[in-house]
Image (cartoon, rainbow, N blue to C red; front, side, top):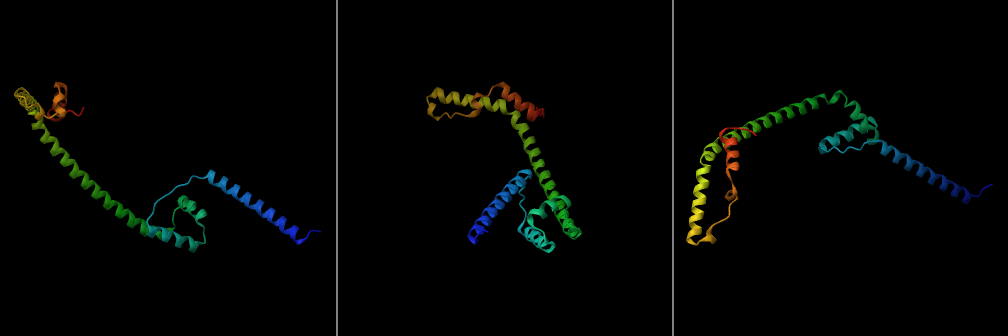
Length: 167
């Protein structure tokens, strides 16, 4: 017959063994699952917690079940409210898109006349820089990105803004 000390040691070993088995099962369970993090408003999290407590469900079991089967009929009103809110936001987005598209069109059409004057402006700019260099004011001549533009670059702008080619 075993003494109390020996029984305590056996319980500790079997309890430790049970913890190892549980830890191993939890590890297997977590490897088989896909973990998803979804940010939700604090209000919704509180309602979800309340719902789980009412139904006597744990988070671990309830959330996958809710994802699979959805919420009960009670939430139809909230879903309609959310749909209406989404529809309202979509209308705002379409309004912003229309405004942005119009602004882009205005800028695009303003670039047409500027592009038509581009070869003249570039020639004038180069002529003025040449005159400054000839007078000896080389330090006053700034380096600009369009100094290296050739006919190919100007033609590209003509195709885009004057001839409205999108290529």
